[in-house]
Image 1: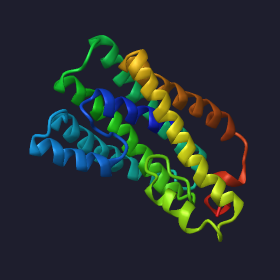
Image 2: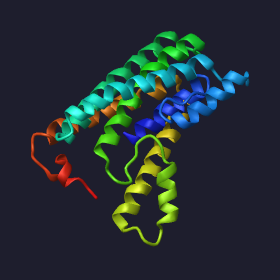
Image 3: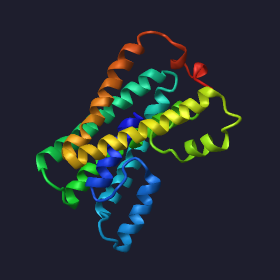
Length: 217
């Protein structure tokens, strides 16, 4: 899911008018640039992303609460909804072709941001230490600040979060530059479908990670 975040933000920043759909800190900054009239920033897309993210979080809160004791089911259901929303974005980009205008950029950014808002709600509910899928500021802070005191599993989780998002952003950028926006976005929902399949199998077998009491500390 972290790799998918890197892919989606690569498409949104490079192809939708310099807008983040996962990193709302960056998106609020970009929104300020757009309001000030800085060239290359889409006000419509930034507002659509911010609004979509809030809608996703609003929907995701009750969904996460209703599945608080079924962690595997929560992840599976959120990943499925995310995949559907991102496939909508792929379809819009594929149907348009070329560089999207501000209207299309907003239309793609909105469902993508809803998807990432849902994902953030789920991750917040799961509350796995050092596991973030959309923002890395505190993860990077932890790597440096706790370099001597943190155990190997903690460091490994933090480093993996950074590496997987970097890989997603790198792959997304290469695809944007050499294959087009629709092809660049496509791997994200495909990855999420794989997550759904894996979790659909995993939830059939009781395991400690599915119980909040058995979550990693």
